[in-house]
Length: 163
Image (cartoon, rainbow, N blue to C red; front, side, top):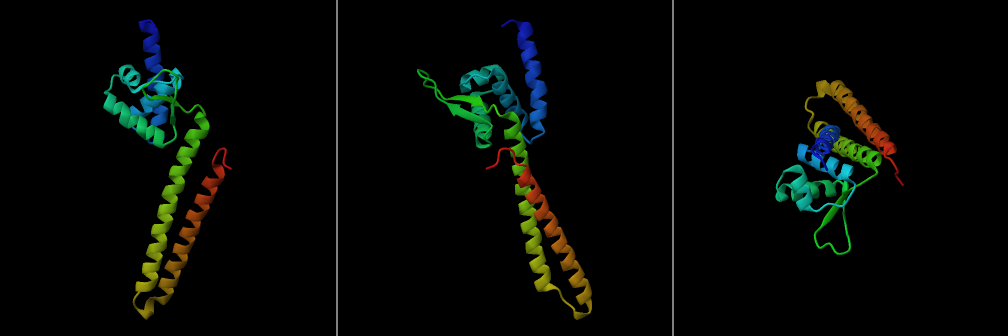
């Protein structure tokens, strides 16, 4: 491939990786995914390392992260003894579900924290003069918890290709 094509390919990888970074991946993970997606061919860690100018160790760490996120898959090719990886080609589905899963997990953790704080507030509220304030606060906390449940349900409904 000539230098002009290499420059164009690097520009495409850089531009696409900026979009991928919006999903919370590191710069290197984003560049690696963009590279694998654009090449659309199984690649070894050595090939990835050479293409991106990073160490094989950095590639191994990044490919493990991408694999854990189901963004890449390890593939087998007859006659090749090294591990090969390829990007998941269902781009929209993978990234939408990745992003939604993060929101659902974060919302669920927040809801648990609020439920724990509600229990602590309910058990430890002192003073009988403030009973109306206590009831009002506990009612508001219930509304906030319901809000988190609604968010969680809405995001679960948005999952692409759910069964």
